[in-house]
Image (cartoon, helix red, strand yellow):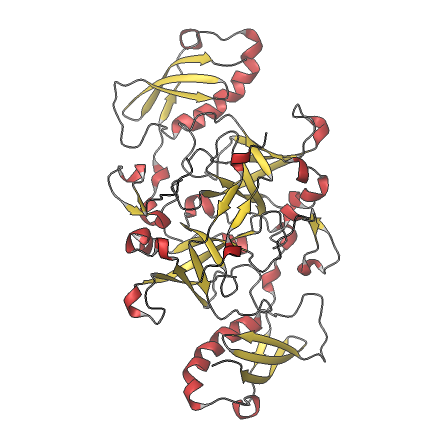
Length: 248
Length: 248
């Protein structure tokens, strides 16, 4: 039944820009209440106000994007071992949201915070959407943006299936005394840090450790928005041990 | 920022099979309560039970598919004129679900009715998902199947924006006397017709006429599952005038 013409070559229409320079720490799936912002920066061919006309009338959008960090390969396994299931149970690739899939596409619903015109921002010449709740790495290629239509997309009665209620679990995040924690906070970084700390509190509370690695003595590291965080988790509390500026 | 490697070549992992042989009549977006079934038939490379393992634990799935009937072109307009807005108001392509988009991908949430093994069906050698609510043509290439996760995908508070409450509108469907309506119903088609009639009652009640064409005297035609239906709409009632078998 397959025809040659049914292959489809996608080209990015935009790129995502955010603090997730490191896979470790990215939320597993979008969270409706996330405050973490991502900029969706239109590529030159679509960098026109008209392409977004009317988009502010929607509160939520879909992003269709590429798992760009997954190495391209001709061999795709039919099953994957989701970390959240302990990493040793195999389930069908079409029964998971795993990145390792035949066509490495992700879909994520996000809240639209605002549309920014090219004039107002450092990334000077591009139209941008500022969205919250995107579970994507910095630099992720975006292949499509669509309005979220609750009458066809929202199914509260749907079952979570194998994924279960993975989001009931939250850690308490203890930052400790900043004098102890910071090694290199210079005065001109205070503003950046204030925003990053808000995001990081959300990120850390979701327990970014690998799901099957829960060693209370181990020190974990996480990069976000130019900061490296070192932490330890004991029972339901995450202790931030050290914060270091890693860029600029 | 764009790199060559960010282009992504998709190949179908499955094809959709249903009664929608004609674009006219396809629901505009998936409807949560739709009873119309579509078979998702896995392509040979993925035609293994393992690829679907665990999928029955989900009530809803996402299909990522191609608008395969949209002619490929290098010129994509940045705006489209959605029929539901009267056909003369231009909105940004990323503010609509229009098929005429830079990367012609559609996403649709569907209910999973059942998984069928290759042994039980006429389409003998393929694993199949039977789903309800797919707004896709017969023969549509499917590029991905993912579980629907209500904790990240269901946003009942989202605004319908420009799309508005387009589904509040329903027509009453009057079939009339079958002796008058049918021209060629042979006894061996009665079973097929019974199922097709259920689907058609749903399809016709959603008013398949082009949104900006509401001529009460005009006779419209619609093909579905091997049947051609002729009808007329006056006020809120759709009158079926003629039913003809068009294949086999």
